[in-house]
Amino acid sequence: MAQAPDALQNSDEIHVLVVDDEVRVRRMLTEYLEDQNIRVSGAANGAEMWACLELSRVDVVLLDLVLPGEDGLTLAGELRRRADVGIIMLTGRGDVVDRVVGLEVGADDYLTKPFHLREVLARIKSVVRRARAAGAAGAKEPEVATGHVLRFEGWTVHVDQHRLVGEDGREVPLTTGEFNLLVAFAEHPNRVLDRDTLMDLAKGRQWEALDRSVDSQVARLRKKIEPDPGKPTLIRSVRGVGYLFAADVRRG
Image 1 (tube, rainbow, N blue to C red):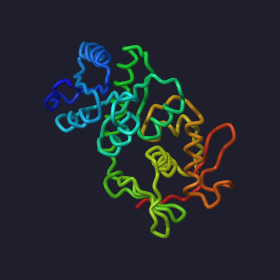
Image 2: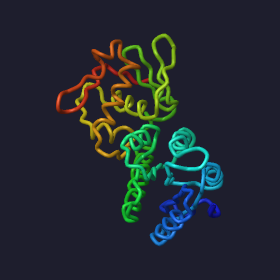
Image 3: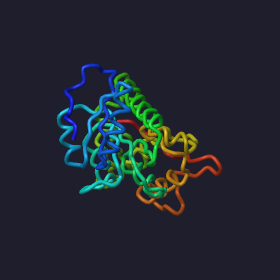
Image 4: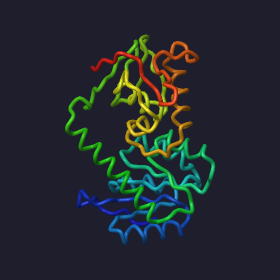
């Protein structure tokens, strides 16, 4: 594992952590990214990844799907819950399911091996740019501070606590993808939103335009919040366009 660098001195500097058990891949990415003035640390597994994250701030984790011990999907889910960091999955698999699952557990993007190094750089910069823009917007909007709550149809969404609570006080567990999608809907009620817009609103993640990834999340979300998921009244389909969240939403 490369020695973890000290805390960043330049707020514009990007620090990337490459988590891959292949030394060749770590070395290739490190050499290229450092030539682009990006700080790079390396880790061969989850334990080394957590050790590096404890020592230094990281902007983006390039996380291989197949790792010894905990796999990349498991680590991505833990990362999303425990750290404020961009996540780009690296996978040699061609199965779309793996990509969609990676996005659902909280990854911001993914790259399929073999990848072009210039594309890696572009994806990293895109993730960092969106994260910093979201942080700047959040600093200007006090309404999204701690305690941000959305209420509709007996449901209460505690945005900052990542919790959905029913009228009876029962908490309904949601995946990161489901929760982000619900917040996107509740923040934009009674408006028709196409799939690309929904993917962008759901924490600004730049997913591949796989309509089924949105549709599958909508289907699961309906099962958790609709009185009759087979005849949805909250999340309505708009043929040929996308979805409309038909609810009066109150803040606070």
